[in-house]
Image 1 (spheres, rainbow, N blue to C red):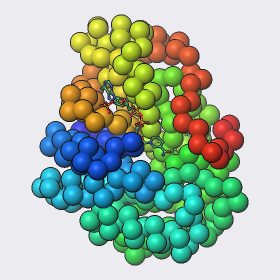
Image 2: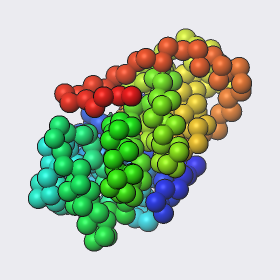
Image 3: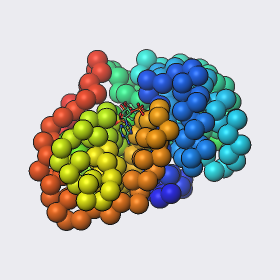
Image 4: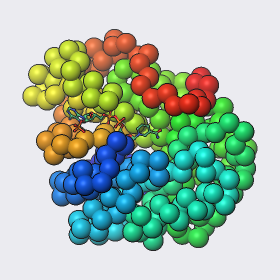
Length: 272
Ligand SMILES: NC(=O)c1ccc[n+]([C@@H]2O[C@H](COP(=O)([O-])OP(=O)(O)OC[C@H]3O[C@@H](n4cnc5c(N)ncnc54)[C@H](OP(=O)(O)O)[C@@H]3O)[C@@H](O)[C@H]2O)c1
């Protein structure tokens, strides 16, 4: 496994995404992934699956210190009391005393960033989360959090894949040594059927999805959390770490359309 270091944490650069998996399906997928060697699991209160992930972790026999668990607070629960309640509930469902990373899942209109981060920092100081971070924050919001509030955020989790350019925000994040955790890293499965990626994959005895993942993980400060319910895909995504892309591959990937954003919930920050 490859790792990146952020705010004193060692984060496995490949994790398992779990959105749209719940109950027994989710439990089985997480158990399978942990048995294959995954050590990073991404969940959120909004996914309604922490209660399936907790038992999967408990059944896995993997030592807690070897696991990296991220969960997120939904944007209706950003006020201090609501966040504490949401956090307690997440921890209880996960059956853990501490998570590795607690993220603000999505910005909310009129959110009070200062009080949000005071609460997040308290959770960190209490040792209930090892680190805090954000998701779906644009450059303007990141600037406030990093340069004004000076919150020690460990990542920004955003949509990033071969079909979406994120150069401006990547540059800003790199200038602050802030890792990018890429969601939808295989473009919600589309990478597997993309002809350019399939052609590149043939050269390396790999699939289009694997090429898409390796392209992401070739970039400094980037981690990826593909969701895969099937064991074969989980294994394939781990095996993507062994591919070596060349300059011609990177050139072909650079020429793909880069304007395809697949996640657009109700309130969207302005993407700059
Ligand atoms: N912070 C946020 O706002 C946010 C938003 C969206 C997502 N996320 C996180 O990011 C994770 C990943 O994003 P996502 O689930 O939307 O998209 P994704 O990981 O890009 O794509 C998941 C889809 O790709 C398929 N797939 C995965 N590996 C494959 C492979 N090797 N070959 C062929 N198909 C493959 C999966 O199929 P099977 O399941 O059938 O195996 C599934 O249908 C989520 O699960 C969630 O944890 C966060």
